[in-house]
Length: 247
Image 1 (cartoon, helix red, strand yellow):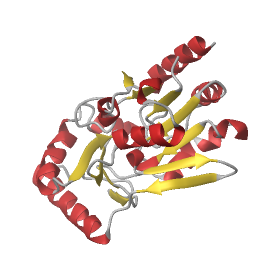
Image 2 (cartoon, helix red, strand yellow):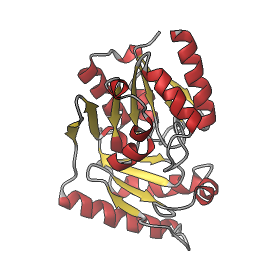
Image 3 (tube, helix red, strand yellow):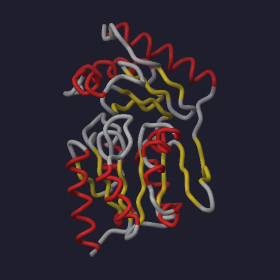
């Protein structure tokens, strides 16, 4: 059996911006009792605290958990408290260029939403995220906005020409994540290898965006055995299978 299971968060462990449900929390706690676990997601650190950490029932299990917010551009490890090991932050000039490029891409693609809930462009320090309907949009609105990714692929194609020196990835239900080139989930996988001392061949990655241009795809490109899921329900079955194998 492998030594580390790595998960995406939104769309994989939980619905977008939602906390783990009771069944998923129970399964994740059980998994952490057997094996090391990591979560890499486009969300920022406060989202990890709300969605994941608050549902881990025993502090001893936290030592088996590594958290990599903003698609691996940050890394947190638990000792006696959570410690940030690195962060790949943008410069002010980079942030300005990204925001301006996003505004141009949204205008050129004619995809500006009539109604939004919260921030559309969010500065997460080491990542800037475009959320088409806003950060606080209702889940039912987000799920039906771009289920086949066609709208966001259109925006990404424009961004790829405007900021070719940066990494542009589709993630979540309505979002596009922008980070430094080479700083993505593949980078996070390699950091897990280096910091935890676990070979990539001893990892499994589980995510819902394992397609070219998806923000989970770089993890597969890094050489991790990857399992694509449609939603948290499928992830639960994957976790059950892993726990049974660890038996």
